[in-house]
Image (cartoon, rainbow, N blue to C red; front, side, top):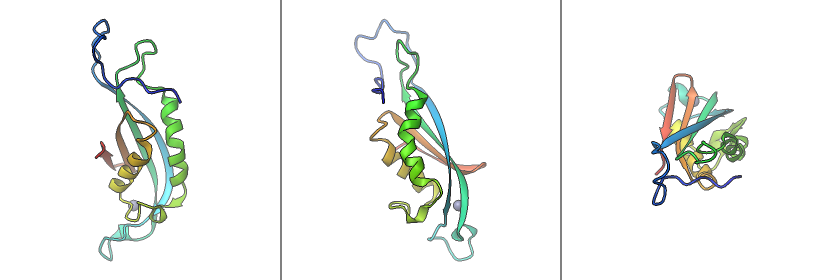
Length: 139
Ligand SMILES: [Zn+2]
């Protein structure tokens, strides 16, 4: 993977146009089963069910002076692939750290597993349905 570009401008860059800090994102999807064990009996989310999850990974930085982009989208996909494989078609409750796999817990879990290989990570969005989701910007 290419070395991520510098996250922000600094001394010696006064010849560059002033870029607003920019975010780009890449999306991946996976299918998984879960239940939320801490909910009261009778809540529908306490029953075993599945979702087609959509995850958007945001990275932030200044576009590279020569290449014109913050990061190659393919680099984001490459960094996400081990995480996608770890989640896709699994029972999320059985994964360490996801014993109560809410969207919030999943967003934090993905952040913690992705951030070491993608240090300019700026946000993780997890949607478990078309109309509901969670955004996490790190601890
Ligand atoms: Zn659910």
